[in-house]
Length: 413
Ligand code: NAD
Image (cartoon, rainbow, N blue to C red; front, side, top):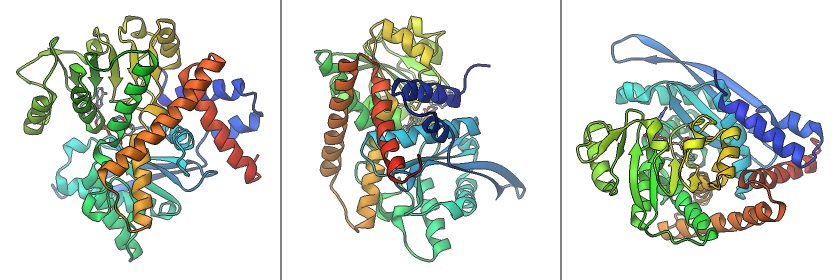
């Protein structure tokens, strides 16, 4: 069996803490979430029977503030994945100047197979079970794989009903009418676009006319492919869990999305060649953006990857072995905890607006996001070039330093 996301996260943590020559207690405290809640959620299905789902909510580190992180509804969700994702969230928040610790939630379920009623009951059941540890000043769940502004709105409604008062800041990624933020649906992808512009500029290239391949056509992948096309990048291929589609002359992303909205899948899209998800990653292109799941770029396929930029939309798409191979080949990697932080950043903006009963315009949200993305890029790029270390290690050093500073201030270490 290959490595899981947690194995990868621990290797990355060990590499960074050793490079920084930190006391071993820092590694010890950061290697596991500080709180781990596993729950069993009974849900009445439409056929009258009760099914029990397993869910998790893990809070990794609270030194920088209350925790935040998305909820995944995925059939292959595991404790190890949730642990890794919660650690990455701590670092993502610290790196991107968000005053929060990291958390992550998950439920083992294929949400596509549930009816809307079953999905709503699962969301409400999940919130009831994790209620003791969440809230606007403790831990606020956001969206991730398999969740949407509708699931987030049901979760908020359940949370508020339980508390008998409104608390929009308790759940992020909800619909606009309940206190969602302008710009949230596209935020992760917009951040990835900003990241792409930065790395392309650093290589002294023009964005217009480059070619891209995007794995995953969900919330992150679809918006990214659309924004890429708007920026003059030719999107050659996209994929979902069922299939991948390819057109060497470039896909019409709006047309592809219209097809997916009608049929629920990329399978059968008539105006492109159908290829495999594995083949997709190895296509000739300038930009490769994995926006699906973790550990898709490994030492096995890394030698065959032809892109010159790897933009990590997914969390943990690249194993450490694969990363070394790609760096040797000259691939410029935009690491996940910086590149895909737009969603977390705007979820943070959403909470600020909620706590102040305020609404920012989409222009304001996007401008703030771009400013932070650019500032963080300058910091990590400087560290990367001055110390001759990978972009990922530069990100981890900056993030860990901040968490350690907060833990020291609290007297934890
Ligand atoms: P989503 O559920 O909206 O979309 C996921 C996409 O990946 C779908 O097209 C799905 O068919 C495809 N997919 C699922 N399993 C796959 C597999 N085994 N192989 C290939 N494709 C597969 O999820 P999303 O919100 O777009 O999240 C995608 C990735 O981006 C995840 O790694 C997530 O953690 C990360 N991410 C999401 C956000 C966010 O704001 N939603 C923020 C940061 C990072």
